[in-house]
Image (cartoon, rainbow, N blue to C red):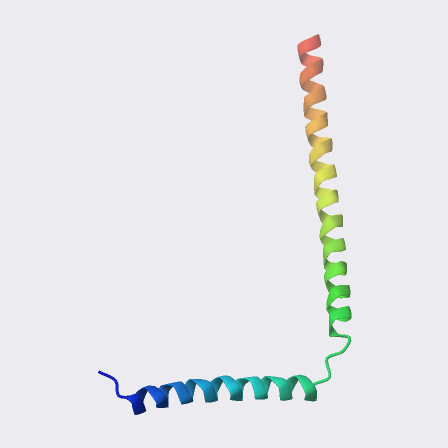
Amino acid sequence: MQTLSSTLDHSALATYTWVRSGLVHARHRLETEDRGEGVISAAIVVLIMAFLGVLMWGAFKLLFQGASTKTSNQVDQIGS
């Protein structure tokens, strides 16, 4: 069974850890300069997505042309 001092020690440790973590986080946020990071990251993501979009469009175009040609050949064979 836990004693009152044991419970108090665990509660105090948990409280200290929580407060200290908050202070360290706040100090880090105040000392670091990360303005503009969101804009740069967003620009990189936009460029990557544009590149992937072009690749997917090219793959779709090639796939559709191949399927269209095969379908056309099959229809011509059925019609003759």
